Length: 345
Ligand code: PS7
Ligand code: MN
Ligand code: MN
Ligand code: MN
Ligand code: MN
Ligand code: MN
Image (cartoon, rainbow, N blue to C red):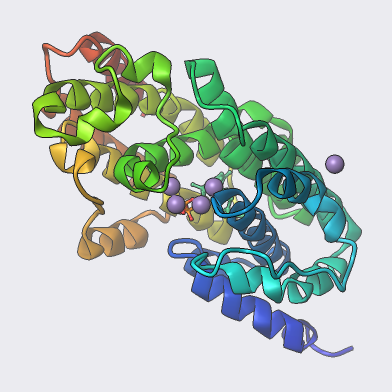
């Protein structure tokens, strides 16, 4: 038999690698470092969801067509000819959809046990995204539901792939609540940080139930005279996101394969660093904030054991504790969540 690496080196797999490196700012390195049992399945899972998200994000698409594409995307995985040449010219990943047959061809070459997980998550995420085409995030329940569709399901699917590969125990794939929390922690951090970018694109994921406590219009927070409300709202959402940390500790404590641990832990430590940067930071309301490149590199290098990861979480939690705005209505919530994090660490 040819060596595994040689088997994977098909023209369509090389094309998938190209898209993986080009489309993922944060995931391509950790995906490429995965063990050979998981690397193709998780690369294809990523590209399938990147394709689906490109449809969701394209505000130039007719809503009816978008709904149809989102809810039938999972069926296209079984059609090796399918592609989509209708995304707006400004969509940064439109050509992934134009050349989507390279993804489906590699999807169809995966073991069936991986295909069923990927197709099931794609189906549920697509239907969830479709539900939110015309629905805005009103309540905190809506916020948790939307984040479940676009990120909690990713955590659940990844966990099932880890278990199916045999690299991780069955328990990791079965505990959907913990896997969901891993995704929610990342997605909420992304939604908090992308306040301005998402607003400018004409969509908002900050829940009205929360922002209406602090202002009359979400877009007002960008203007200097509504800054105080904007910051209190931002701090409210940071406190909300931190609630998922104890579950993330339990989840990561179960992982026993080094490459899987790194893959899971690196985005989590980037997220806690990002929350610390965003907390009470008026720049979030005015421009795109990002952790420094050097900080990201040190975090990536350190996040290779549970003890180190807990260390990182404790140190950012201490920073959050020391910055805590005692006059915020959600100060008590922040404080008690941080105490719980210190206790579980
Ligand atoms: C399959 C690795 C590890 C148990 C494309 C990884 C957008 C935050 O602002 O491009 O939309 O541009 O930075 C990733 C749990 C999902 C959740 C989700 C699939 C962790 C399509 C990632 C990534 C679960 C929906 C970043 C959630 O997107 O944001 C694979 C464990 C895709 C994970 C979206 C967001 C990912 C995200 P933006 P990004
Ligand atoms: Mn999206
Ligand atoms: Mn997106
Ligand atoms: Mn369907
Ligand atoms: Mn975003
Ligand atoms: Mn975006």
